[in-house]
Length: 461
Ligand SMILES: [Zn+2]
Image 1 (cartoon, helix red, strand yellow):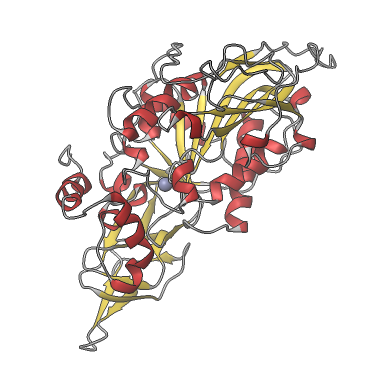
Image 2 (image 1 turned 90 degrees about the vertical axis):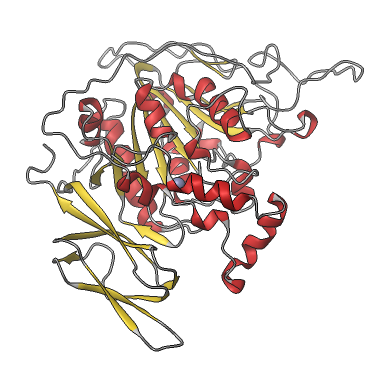
């Protein structure tokens, strides 16, 4: 067990003082690679590194059981109109306090939907068609309506809602799109979250493709997608919230805490608690890239079983760090994994395809969709993994590639000092596979450069 206070917190706390304003930090960020200025943002480790290094080892027996989901729904902090499901364009008396434009929704079908990037222009709600009778070839159980964000979504329909954490100037508030497909048949609720870190783009596209491909009249269960959780970060190509905090360290949040606490709380109470299962999609960060992989607490029997539904996706055991969405959701009885795909700031087709494929396999495994799905060979489960850090600062050059199998002592790359001409090899700590690594770049001593996974002796056990 490591210290309960993550190192990044201490570093952040110290260094924040030296930054005059958050705004300046934002401006500086654009120049950081040119000037070499060390910012708080760069010192905070990403979940790719931290959740592994803080992880408890896997126990021999999986005895921990997931608690029952808590049904409570708290709409505190949620600004919504009184009757969003049935409203037509309102005739607003400007002397009255108008609801902020946060919770408009539009019922659509996936085939006719454009990407949910511009919710402000969404038209007022059209009432969905009357209850859709299920096709009765197999007489599946009909579904119920789903009420989310004060809006009723009828069975067999899909819609675009908006979530607003209520932290902005109300009149300027910008809602975050939430995509909902409520299947015609009863089943579990699967939630997908992307861009909790605003610069992690692959997940946004993974969610779009997975959701727009669904047919509500054939779906058993519900799929709720929040493609861009951290909308302010996304708009600034930043991993962080406007206050420089990492949202993924503040779940389940608090209604009266920091900005990050409040956003986390609002998301968790208004959306996450409605989920039975959650896939939180991330990428590597700080110029690191990952093989498509799940991060999952394999000590949790329900989570371990859940990972078997993801086709062609390596599984890395990780108990995670406090404040992560994954940890908070599991604590609330929601079966949750993190899906890591590729690098931040990039759209990577092969990573996106891998993510969409595994979500489709998951939905089929859960009985939500029925497709002619062809399963690939099972990927290994990595119960043990280590990040190897550089001992020297310099320019990192790798000799290995993502996915390579390596042996203990093998040279993975080297750090070259551009002034002294010294070259420092970096060696593998164990036999295993490169499941994550830094791209070639300038590094300082201590930078986590290679993530070596050691396969479980009994894969998928
Ligand atoms: Zn992330």
